[in-house]
Structures are given as C-alpha cells and as structure tokens.
Image (cartoon, rainbow, N blue to C red; front, side, top):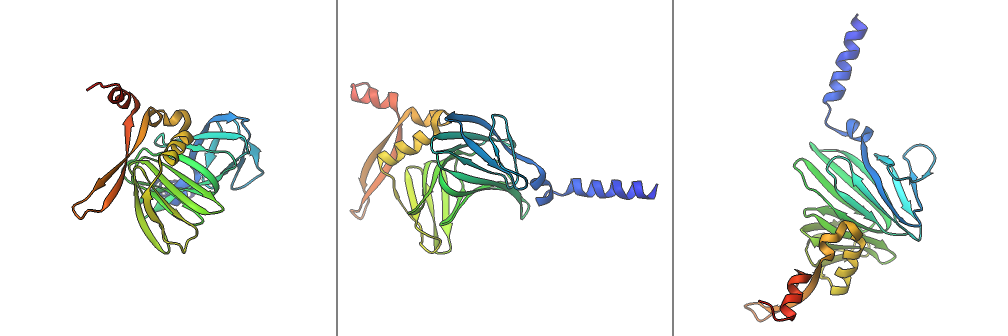
Length: 246
C-alpha cells in the first residue's frame, strides 16, 4: 500500500513539472509536406535515422535533413506554427523550460528555413546558427546559413539577431548578417530581390505574402539624411495605382 502511495505521489509531482522533463518527452512537430523529390531523413536523438514520411511526429532533439532537390514543411503541434525547409538544409528541434517559459529552438546547422510563428504568452521561439541566434518577436522571417555565415530577413514583425559581439532588431523589410559569433550583426534594408526570394521560401504557406509586392521608398529625415524604407504593398492595390485607380 505504501509503495503504491509513493508511486502515485511521484507521478503527480512529475506531472506538475512545467520544465524540461515534460518538454523533452513531448512531440514537437509533424511533417505535413514533402515536395519535389520528397527525400528527407529524420535523425532521431536516439536510434537509427529513417526516411521521413508524411505525418511523421518529431520529438525533442530530433533533426531533419533535406536532399538537394527536396523542400519540406513542418507544423508545430502546440500552436500550429509553420516551418518551411529548403533543399540541402539540416535543422534540429529542441524544446524545454527556461525561467518558466517554454523555449523552442531550431538549431540550423546549414541551409535555409522560413518560419511563420504564432506567438503566445509563456513561449519563446529561437533559431540558433553558428554565427548567432535569431529570437523571434514577430511572425514571419527567413534564416539562412552558408559559407558566408548567417543571414536573417524579416518579412513581418521583428526578429532580434544577436551573438557574442552584439545584437540588432531586424524589422520587416530588413536583413542582418554575421560571418561568425564574433562578428556583430548589423541591420540594413533588404533588396527587393532578397525579399522576393524570401517570400518564395514560404511557398504555399507564405501565400499571403506572395500576394504582395515589395516597394523601395527613399525618404529624407529632418537632418537631410536619406533613409530607405521597404514596404509590402498588396499587388492588387499597386496594380490599381499604375492603372490610375484612386
């Protein structure tokens, strides 16, 4: 009887833990799209790697890697946030508790990802790269890791990009890059071509963005300095202006 009582108490205490013990056991995301060749592997935290299948459930510390001609999409099971993964990319998913907040981290080793994050209280979303960390304050962004380092492009909202050398807020229509963790990231306007390419990474999941056009506007401030502003304008509205509609 005493053994049963102690076991019940222990189980109850474990169930009350909001931290890492529960987070590590939970399913983090599922594979809901495999495009082009559909060749993606799942590299579990324990056990042999396997070929990804639609509907696969990914857990804490699982990694996925796409082939040279495969794009994939993951959906997070807790809030429906979307992650698009470009070809030749590898990303590991981790989840855990940090100072009472649920922290989801994508460890992007190489390649390119697009994400649309549904923000909620008590949860944080980060993308960790070899050159710095992108902490998500906004909703839609792209992170790329290649031989030149890491680049963040924000399409909607704000992403804080930081490393050992410094930090910067990357607002919508801007980009920031760092060659290494000792290279302070600096934000600057992204070019229209960079923004179009970032939209393309979102594919069907970025359809709301693809229905708009990025427009570069240059303004002069009170000191006579020229500032470049990137605006996302609905394509229909822009077409109407060109055709003379009010």
